[in-house]
Length: 149
Image (tube, rainbow, N blue to C red; front, side, top):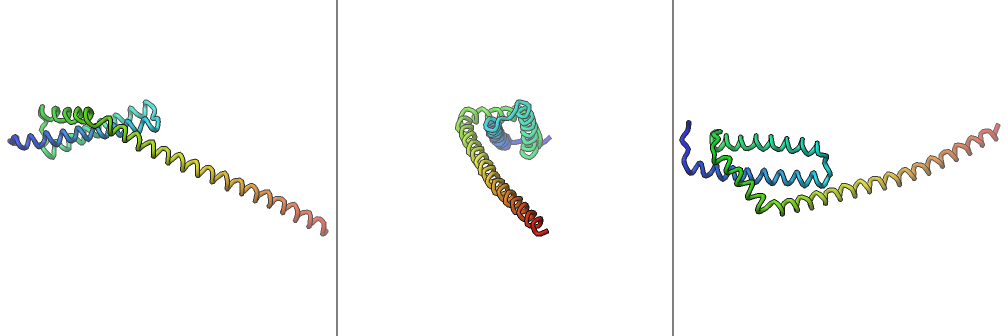
């Protein structure tokens, strides 16, 4: 077992507090994404499960790099402190920002779809007119051939 100095423990505490803040940001990001695009409960559950597993893996990677993988009480305290700080200080503002961001993206995508559909309608009308003209020309040419015989 390695001896860990107080300075190293403090740095690990800071890293994991930052990790707690980042985890909070990611969860708010996904929550705003799901609310804007109306995810089903099952989809939301699957995404939350994946995020929890990814967060766990990431925290243990940080622990492995910074603290040789040792899990101590202050590790959980640091994560909890980071998440609490995030939710008390930043969550409501970032969540509103993420909601606005996704609503803008949704409006843009819906506008592009609407433009695409209008363009397709216009082209279909032109295609139908061309087909009608082609059929008239074909009938006319067919009558001409019959008339020549």
